[in-house]
Image 1: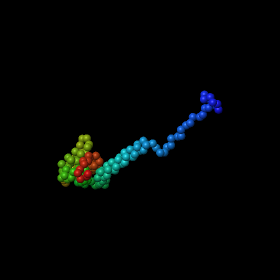
Image 2: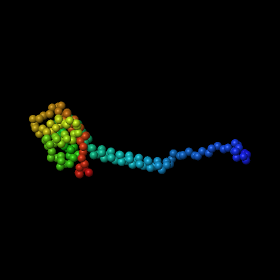
Image 3: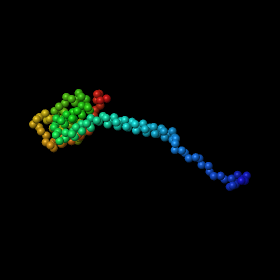
Image 4: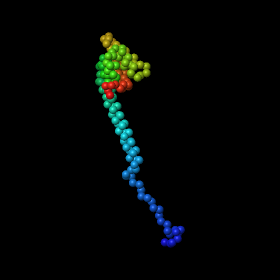
Length: 160
């Protein structure tokens, strides 16, 4: 070694700092991780709440599926009314029958162009001369299933 600071004999290799370890992570990673965990927990809680609040829809659809072959207008109407009693205020739904009940169901079906089969059959449900054909029964059950899954449920005082 020489005393000359500019001499090439005095060169040393570059000192590289040690590699950054994977663990423990930086504080920002902890914050982002906790925020992501909180968002996932809230989403799971809301999903479970929605799943539970729609249990009556699944039960009504299962009942409609079970009576498909031997369905009568009264049976379909009773299933829809039970679902409506869960989704809407009892005072609003319980007293409805005949054309008023048919109008209530049709107004909340959500299909463009209305529900001619469902409305006609529910309006004339008490008339023993009105026996629906097999095609009408199938159409009524399809419309009933559609109603069960698509009607807008109102927040009722009893449900909260």
